[in-house]
Length: 313
Image (tube, rainbow, N blue to C red):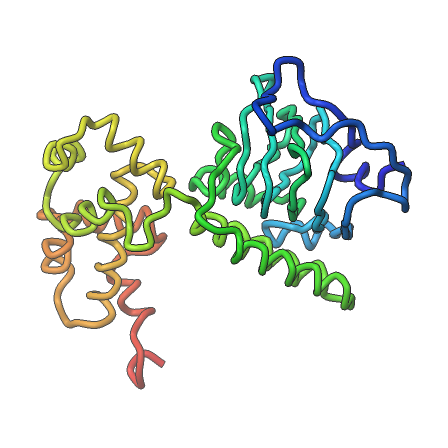
């Protein structure tokens, strides 16, 4: 029996009919193997987090590395997320019944709960590391664009940082102790952020559309007016912001405005009306309603609670 069956499901060989076989890119053929006598290098460890660990938001279920003529995986459906980072080599990936697509390292493969997947390396094999995880925060990471179920094959500019996080998780598991699940939970969050920054389309200087919205966030402009300034349609602007920030243009601008309002409330003596105007709200009453709805308390109460120094103690 495959050790990975509990979390990763069973390993099979072969590629779907009509799969990509181009030139020397030939899928790894049938591999005869038995447990404990696998013909490829591997290490994996699985964890059983408690309900309390799952309430941390994300819980690690498994972590591992593999290299060589790894048998094809699937077709199968899992109940949890898996991030598979292809470190070297090439292969193929199919999901949701779609025809297989080519994969070239460095790349990230998202195995999404409830979505059938099937994948494997071309000859002479590839190197990968993987992390299985679950938890209520996974949905939020999807909403924010860190996990993309519509585009599960993600080219990376480099896999080095992600591999470092996975190796750190492996070291935690090897060391053991009473807090392994807590430490690996924190590392899953770190891995998702690391993978987002490692995407080939990630601009370390910041996305130009988001940078433009940030520069103009305090102007009393509608989303339509922002789109016009950027020479984009409203639909294009919404898609760009959703893809790069995981939210709508309105929410992105709102977060920038309210963050600046908090700085002014706690760092200056300006009145609420003056602060409202500075962050793009000519109507202070409307600003107060928006602030209270998002923050949970009014600007005045926030100022009182946020004071630092003897008067605020």
